[in-house]
Image (cartoon, rainbow, N blue to C red; front, side, top):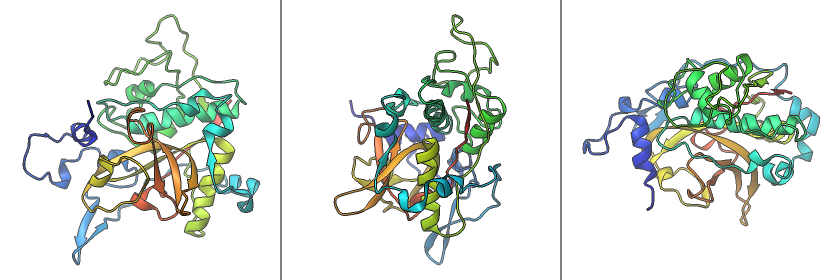
Length: 309
């Protein structure tokens, strides 16, 4: 049976699918949860056009230089295409994983936990191959609302401050649970927390072209990053190709893991992204979104962290 992702998404947002009235923007409980620097009034009409409402930024701690990866690799050495799975898949099986968040609105946690898992393996040169626990973040990140949505940057500050256990220790159940601290759901496993060194947003104010290169270099050096972005109704039934927003009907926010980039046969640049809606969705659980234009705000809220291995 084909899953209607918009019906599922509405259930996360607290919208009754049987309600025939058009939901107001304040029905969306996840907006400020999944868009870390935004509040509920995401968009407003100005002179007949839909434009983002500007709000104060929520700061996230950065390393001494968010450009350090780009300076190390060099802008001229960034390839036209890159896929973390090709580079590290033999050593790091999590890079090839596509998870399914089910009915739980925990994309903020799943994007963080899977990116963290990939980065831990890359930083350890393949020694650490565990999938780390989305459920641990859902249960214990108390600034967020578990399966009712959360903040991507707070997920990463949680990883730096409190660390995370493996999925084997606290398996994903897709429901809100009490935070158990250093006690595994699987009692045969000993909790062994791994920590991020920091939490930061790889971003360059120099130019948008430079900002894209900063993100690319960050992925090449340290592994996948987490992106949060605006969701419009044309994304909900997207089935393949390179996504570019064509709708002004705003629906909510989402967070995903960015694993690479490339160009299609016509030279259209894209980001390669692992979603959390299972392998049957879109392109085997992945999708491509146009790169370099900040479509849907995709490039302005990237979050990541170095792993303390």
